[in-house]
Amino acid sequence: MVFPETTLNDNLNQLLGEDGPGFIFLARESGNAVGYAVLTLGFSIEFGGKFLLLDELYLVPAQRGIGNGRLFLEFLCDVGLRTEAKALRLEALRTSAQVAKFYTQFGFVLDSRDLMTKRLV
Picture 1 (cartoon, rainbow, N blue to C red):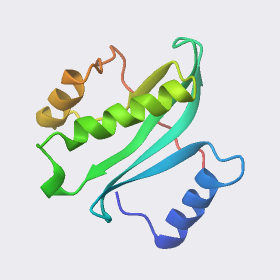
Picture 2: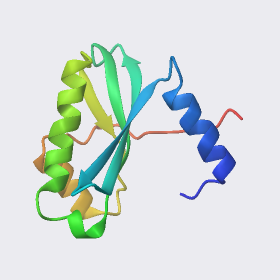
Picture 3: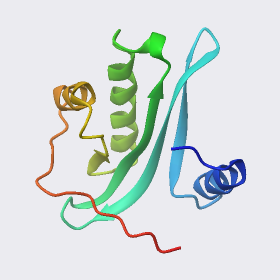
């Protein structure tokens, strides 16, 4: 999804502010940015307390299929453990079997419920 620059900047400032609800991580190779991940904090009684939502994960095409996605996810899981999160959750497009296969091979489980959204503003 493409966001207007002002909306994106406002959202990033909220996320990364003093009491912001998340983190952004930049993946680099030889000093060059090759990807990023955005984690946000949430709370779930069902999952036992604090969880992290993997809101964004992106690697440039040249970095895919060679194990870098797995390394990035391992790092993000470690972040979850260090922040005492009980689960790492994510959204994935149902139309991408390749993406679903990647995440399930990493240990993610497809929930038996659908995520539903109602925008409040």
